[in-house]
Length: 397
Image (tube, rainbow, N blue to C red; front, side, top):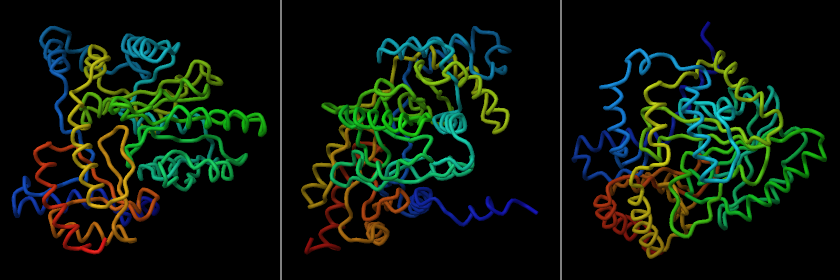
């Protein structure tokens, strides 16, 4: 008999993917340029020229066996050392190569980190609204994901609810900052308070509570935003990073776990990640991609378009009467829908070729997400459709 739990998952469709599928089909009817598809968080800017040049140079000059062969399970030592040096320089940390484990994107990083610090039956807390894929990421490890209700005022942490849920069964807390879907970054004040609470509870319960920081949007931070490096605040932190957004390399599947050197048992965690890889098959990212990332480690794509798009949308949404917390980063915005049922709201928007994602699967009802990683010209053209949608469907808003 086939596994029934995975079979059951076939009925749990991804709302994001369904919206994207609809947008693609509609595009075949009227031209995709006329569909204002805000569904999928796929970077819209190219990788830096320096990354492409590094790939070409290596392909032309380096040993093909080296470029296309397996790397060591933790990653290529020189690449890990380069990443550690970059993090130390930028954030004042003390990483070495021994604290870096190369992964297939942030998803692979989270998959390893969770397994390092939890046993089946342990609880992990995360904060609404949250990336829906955390459910399979966590639940398939045997750990139990519990979601702290959202702080709807500003999408910082709801500390009152968090403290109630932070029982002695909790072995890890999973944060995502800057956040998908809100675009909000946790402030220094929030992270200071979070760290103090975790440290106090560690002492009270007599066991470690690890902080897993999911950081694929770390480099997409807007002017004036307070978006500090999480590991600076709390010793027991595992940072999970991806180059999918910063270098526009989602298809290359490359990222890492960075273990805070002050973390309990830090000297074992990267080695443990290697053993975890044996069980989940999530190992050895492509050698050539590791090497190219190392050559461009302090670069990003031109990410400025995301802030430009955000400002266009934010200003228009507010002028139309939407309640909306201004994003501090990412390429997402998370307004409150103009009716209680966000699914109905987003379904109505389709009539105007606006493809929006209702918030229910993010653990927060009554909102919708817009992924504005599209051309600015298309964002500007979408404003007319947005106005028509709102003025026609919600004239008494």
